[in-house]
Image (tube, rainbow, N blue to C red; front, side, top):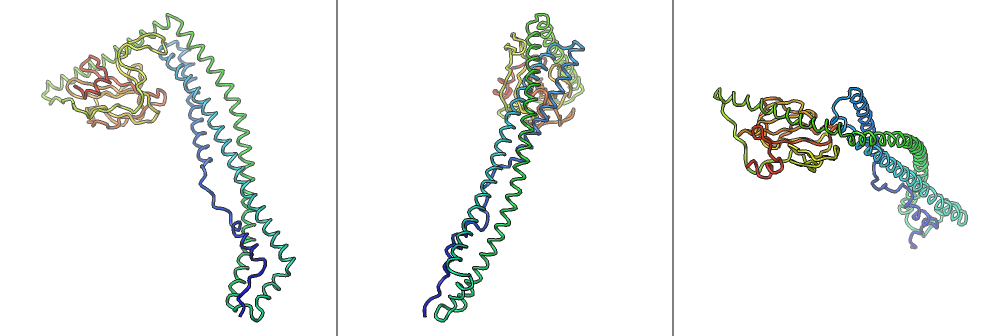
Length: 392
């Protein structure tokens, strides 16, 4: 008995198998989420710039705090640069997203065209060899295979035909959605480009004005001397705070309170992971363009980053540190005090016992850096050396 013969159009069906269903999409970057994140950062930076401009205007009207004005102007220039840079980065992401949408549309269009070519080839084959019924029935003639194999093949043909229709309908819907998304992204990109151009012009002009104001104050010797006096006054006020805390500690000892002992060893940690941007001692002050004496160090940190206790101690005071915003002062024992300033979201209360590495608060948005000072009694100690030596 002669074996079962496959119809002539089967090669066309097999060739079509690769394009019945859309190819599995490779993992692509989630541009929608990334764009939303970058837009949120832009909004936050924009709000910060507006707030800073209002604060600068208020300082100018009150004619107070030359040092504060200098720091505000410097911070405003830095944040303006960040905002302008973020505008460029967001546009790049939008352009990449647009290219991705176009690629998606190209891929689905290619699948549709491949399917149309295969279907056209199948139609030509059927036209040249006869109707599907004749071709299938020819294989059922006596001596051409068993009945069950013929039934199996017939079902395969019907499944392929159904898949052709379903795949074509699905790709048509995908193409429609892709075109709509592409149109939406094009509108978004064009709108953002117009917004970016306007913001670039506005804030580039504002930046130049702030640079002019900064240069004017820096070149004014009277303003510079006033700023230096403010630095000295801030240092004196901090000393007064420590003196008061030291007096309170001695009074408590006189009432038979057990004295705490400084934890020593290698457990000390930097309050926040980051670059030390201002060292202890005589340093060149970038804003004032002159040499000043730093009583502590400043560590760069991302806003919101946790600020931790360098060593264990008791929260002696939570207060505004002159020149450095809100801060926490720890009594670490053995006459040592550590000062942490430029904080936000303070998580401890006066009288709390804290361990080495315990979170005290976070880096403030306004500063973007942490001020850290170490005192033995009222005398300052180099914080970097103190941390390296483990308090010895």
